[in-house]
Image (cartoon, rainbow, N blue to C red; front, side):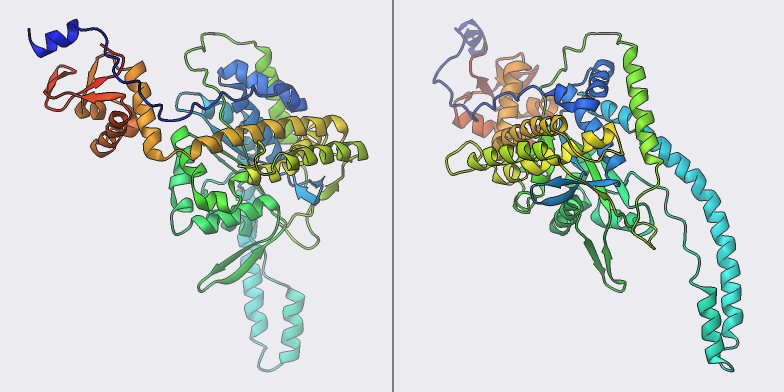
Length: 496
C-alpha cells in the first residue's frame, strides 16, 4: 500500500491539540438604530434596498447629515462649543455593499455640486471680463504715478482690489491629502466632506506615507476640533485657515483597518479617537430577498431633498469674508446637559486602571463630546433653525456614542494582534472552511489561497506559525496537492 493510500484509509488526524492563535473577538452589539431619531427611517430604507448591514447605512446617514448642517452651528459640550462635524470609519469586507449604501445617500451632494459647477461657469465668464476691465484701469492709473503720486494713490484706492475669483464649486474632496484639502479651503467653500470608499488608498497612500503621516494626522485632527490649520510652504510663505469645517466617512476593508488601528502615530495623536468606528457583522450569504419595499425609495428621496434644502441655504460667514464660517451656538437644555454629565462621569470611572475602558482611554475621553456632536447633528437635521438640544436627542447621542465606543474597544483589541498572526489566522480559517483536501502546499496557497497570502514569502511565514502551533504537520515525503506533486507538504489538523 502506498503512503498516500495508507493516509487516506487512516482515521482523521487529531494529534496534539492545536494552540489557538488569537483570542476570539466577541461579536459586536447590534446597532441601536432607534437611537438615530430623524435618521432612523433612511438608515432602515438603505438596509432594505441594499441589504447591507444597517450600521453601514447609519454611518452614511450620520456623516452626510453632518456635512449638510456643520456650517450652521456649533454644539455645546461639557468643555465649551464644538463643531457638529462627524468622522466615520466603517470596516467591512469586499462584497458587503458598503459603497452602494454610501452612494445612495451622497447623491444629493453630487447633485448640488453639479448645480454649483454650472453657476461657476457663468461666474468665471463674468470674472474674466471684470478682471480685464480692472487691469486696464489699473495700468492707466499707474501711468500718472511719476507726475502725481498722491493722485495716483487716491485713484488706486478708489479703484479697489482686483476682482476675486469665484469660489471653486466643490463640496466633496477628491484628494484625501491634507494639502489637497487646504487648497480647496483656500479657494473654495468652507464646509467640505471627505468621503471615500477606497479607504485602503487613503491609509496606504500619499497622505499616510511615512513622510506625511504626522502632518496629515495632526491637520485632520485640527479640522475635527474646529481649530485653525496652518500651511507653511517653501516659497509661498505661511497661511492660516479658520472658520472651516470637515465631515468625513472612510470605508475600509478589515486588513487595512487593522493596520491603521495598529499605527502608533494615528493612535498616539488621538486621531483615531475622533472617528466613530463600526465593524458590523457580515450579511453576505443571507441577502436572499429579490425585492424591497417601494416606500424605501420615497424615504431616501425625502432624505435627499432635505439635504439639498440645507445645502442651498446661505452660509453664515464672518463679516467681510467670502469663505470663513461663523456658526451660531447651539446650547444644551439643562436637563440634556445633566444627561451628558452623568454619561461623562460613568465613562470616566470606567477608565480607571483595571476597569473595562482602561485600554481605550483616548476613545473613551472623547465619547461624551461625540455624544454631544451626534445629538447636535440629529437636532439640526430635524430642524436647521433649532435653538437648543433637548433630552431626547441627547439620549440618542449617548446611545450611539456608547455603541461606537464599544466598537472602538473591539477593534482596538483586534489591532494589537501582529500582522503575521492575523495572516496565519486567515490561512487557518481558509484551510478549515474553504480548502477541501487534507494536505496543503505553499504552491496551492499562493495560487488559490486568501488574497493577502498570494505571495510565497507571506505564505511560508503563515504556514510556519501554523506548524509551530500544531495546526499543520509537515510530512517527511512529498505528495499530491491540488493534483500536483509537491516536495514539501503539510497535513491539516482534523481533516482527512
